[in-house]
Image (tube, rainbow, N blue to C red; front, side, top):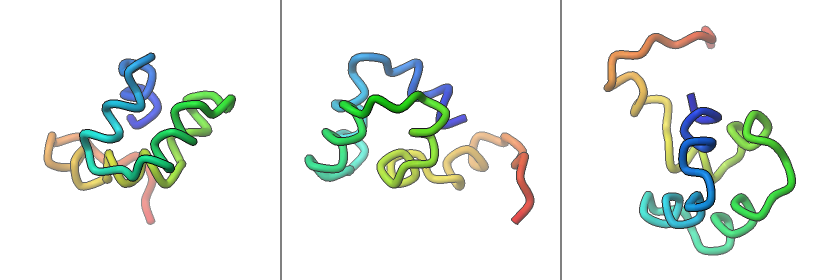
Length: 66
């Protein structure tokens, strides 16, 4: 889901990360990364901005069991 949200944000990814409390440096490094959305979905910035409990609160099931 993080990958999907990151793709939806598109060019405004940096602003969205900052709105969600990610530090300037981490948000900038993530937004300007050459890696694709799938790889970035596991980044600390996206895990901080979009925690798993956010998706659980929307009623979405977890696909991975930990």
